[in-house]
Length: 591
Ligand SMILES: Nc1ncnc2c1ncn2[C@@H]1O[C@H](COP(=O)(O)OP(=O)(O)OP(=O)(O)O)[C@@H](O)[C@H]1O
Image (tube, rainbow, N blue to C red):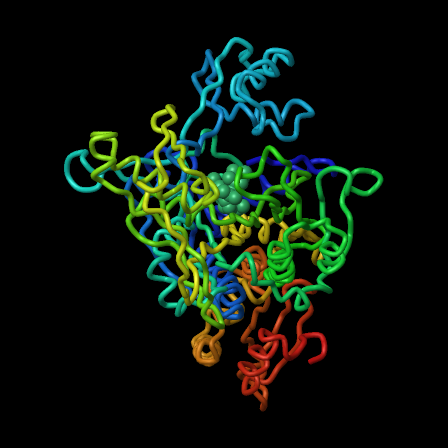
């Protein structure tokens, strides 16, 4: 969980201006404002909810529909045993340091990273973080009091609750949507007809009790994830790399693979795999799918890269992890993580639950195998080992499976509670038999692209934020891609006039029937109405003026947001033309 510093000079005002615009125009704002607001919770307003919905739809189209994956929708509260198995109860912690003066809590690793040259303080042991804080005499970001003598503690980020009355069944709000997929694996594999590989997606809320939520919707306590868990047979399944081999990417790998000045390299997915820069082919495949997706929803590719996790940052089970990052005011922020989680999650749930988290893999031809078994003589073991006889049986069974040579002599040696015992082989009933088997149980490996939707929304808005001058006046506009813009077209009658309003209402109906999202606005002067839609990021505005109602052919003015260029179009063709522009089949300039 780190935020690497980018190389460009900070341009803090854009974020501040964006947050102000987002509130004014209905993108997002802090929740429960009437009660003073609460840190880390945001409400998406009408524009924001629509933009977020469009981003989610675009993700679903690419990662579920186009890839042939299933989508599920699981509960956000899950019982404690799930998180015992997943490891979240034990280890989903951040480092906390509390200010002795103002009492504010801060992420100790962030305090270190923000004020020293450490890039990966999260991976340092706590005593070392305490030492760095003392050595650099770091202070509380809120009030400036010294933190040198403060203890750094671990803090579990899960929100807990009780399921039902009383406290007999503790539950937790899920900190990632992934567990909702893993726990249902025994059923999901049936829907996939027990055939690997297959993928399951989920778009939904996740909850983390972040120590210091910050940067508006970038770090919140309730956020939306879009995750794909792709289950593969590690022995035989290979990704269709040829589909993404030519995708150009900017990579920021760790260590020696950096180019000479230690920064990013520009390459293709195919070359990166060939040269070993991206070690895991499955991860490489999904990076290749993700890059054009980010571009399509409006992330500026000059401010986008994939960064390899530093070794201390990786989950212990993941061999090679990459993050998709966007540049925001000179800082790189993580938008998504791509990891091969191996068989870690499924094996853990198999161990902790009563179900099977494997897939039965049928061989093309049945195989004959030798199997070593034991059938101990209990009339010997009973008197010899008493209450421990059953344990001896299990020891012998395990030994026969693992090391049949142990049964080659006259006696066999086993260990019971650290003590070694010898018993005659003839009393173990050891034998090797031939068996025909049709297949084997395989624990799939899981490849996980894990996207944060809120951070995509924030990046898209930040990268779309633009200022220019029109007719001598400063203008702010959001250069949003038509695919995700909350409103595609604004319709205005030039003045308050029954005749103009009637035509305008007909135009609104026509455009809505064509599937376009339309807003109608008849308040204020026309310049102000254009500015309003510019700030919302509406790609086109249509104005109904006196020429519309007086001329023989009914035409309207269509204005394009970015160029502010205006053209007159016949009302009869309007819906069709605008729909074609939205679908990318026609261009405004060419009309
Ligand atoms: N507190 C949060 N607020 C908003 N989005 C988040 C938050 N935590 C995680 N995400 C999103 O979920 C994605 C996947 O979660 P993951 O567990 O990989 O994040 P993480 O590495 O813990 O993030 P970070 O390092 O920023 O805390 C992240 O890439 C991010 O987009």
